[in-house]
Length: 219
Ligand code: C5P
Image (cartoon, rainbow, N blue to C red; front, top):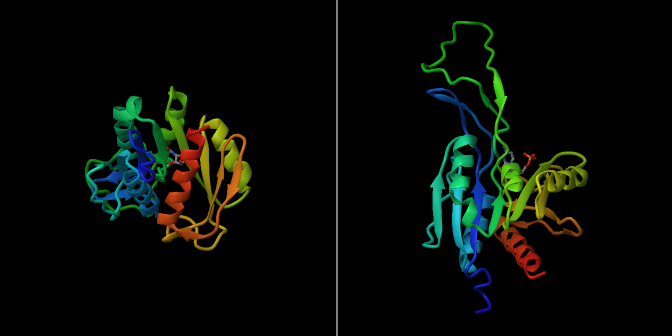
């Protein structure tokens, strides 16, 4: 069946933002909608893959029996969830916008506004994708790079540093690209190739990404 091009493959996708708790009512987050990851999950499932979608807080939903959705909140929870499945996946796609830093301590009670200044100490979060790259045995790993300057150089640097097979670059300098839009404009890099795509809906971008992954797997 020509359309079931990912039959027999298990694909893990991270999506959405992460929320890092400050106190019981507040968090540090970002504008990621999760759309790109959910589009990828839907398209991979259509192609016959078994999909494990690990998503931070997002209003997106999916109803496909081939997609198992696991909701997480923080980067640390996302990391733990990814590694519950990592050994048995064939393809890993990290589209989540993981918070780079989290508050060192989470206040047990709501922080009061008694002081004029408030300092919250932040500590670096684990880099989930980099950890996946370090532990890679057979998995084909795809990362995203959302850049505002030196885009190509930064994307290629991340491809190498995180031990990835492929990276999808979107530049916030391109109108209609990035996390707040329903559209995206991407470039794909592997260690030896580069391909540029037009501005499209995220559903169509998901098709381009998975076509590219499939072509790489056939090599
Ligand atoms: O280094 P940077 O955050 O730009 O890398 C982006 C890529 O790494 C994305 O694929 C993102 O999902 C992943 N990432 C991650 N864990 C982090 C930071 C980024 O998985 N803590």
